[in-house]
Length: 325
Image (cartoon, rainbow, N blue to C red; front, side):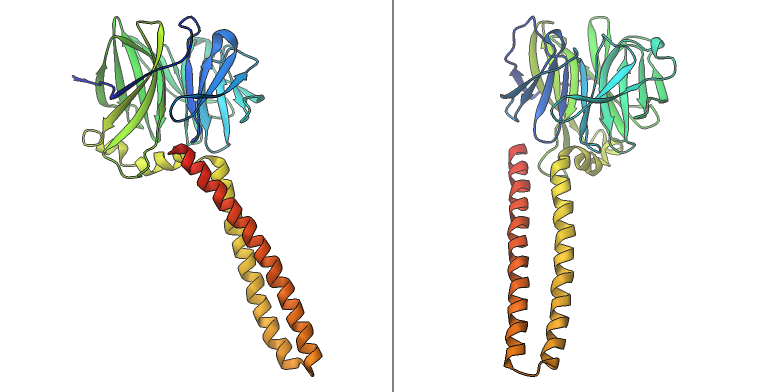
């Protein structure tokens, strides 16, 4: 069995009694939960704290929904409920898992499947696919050992499994069959996992950041790489993974608005050209031509001002991308 060794280990700045339990990535920042004190830390790509959120509940599991531009989180204090959070990590809605939630408690991990627009949750003995209305869509049970985390790499899943004193990382295909099986170093205990997109869409490996504890006390970020040569069938859809995880929703919205406005401006300029030609043909004297020229100049000035605004939007998108790099 292949041992999955991390290529990078980063200690996290926190008291060993206040451990991080969940991790999410929105394309720009990492969000790590500390349920013991009802707090979530925001980190940049260098894992430096950039903001601290005090939240209402002791969220353990958390994930980012790239479709709805929100977070989903769960707490052991409220079994069977998954909370929807906005980008300020405030509760805006919730879903209740049905049916038969008590058979699956407690929740160990939570991830978002961008291909199906569903949540996947890890419980001690089960992996569940859950719709955003709370309906259980499918279930995979584990007869031995127990799950400690789950990560969606649409349409496949990566899960951590603990058996006795050993733990492993498994890759499942969409039908629930195991595609790859790795032994994980026993010095660390996996708490949660998140996909970290590479700058290039085509890559020879998939990079995953693992939130773990060393000796069950000291929080660490472990960076691992899963080779595509062994998992080629699973990760042939890596472009979809990249698209779901790499592009933050604000940047997508800005790009869409720019495209729509440029299309509108193109139509205006085209219509202006048609009217200009017709007006010149109908003009009877120089005064008429001067009035036509004045109207054209006013329209072009307004279009130029709008183009400056669109350029500013593009600069905003560029700054978002630079933050991720």
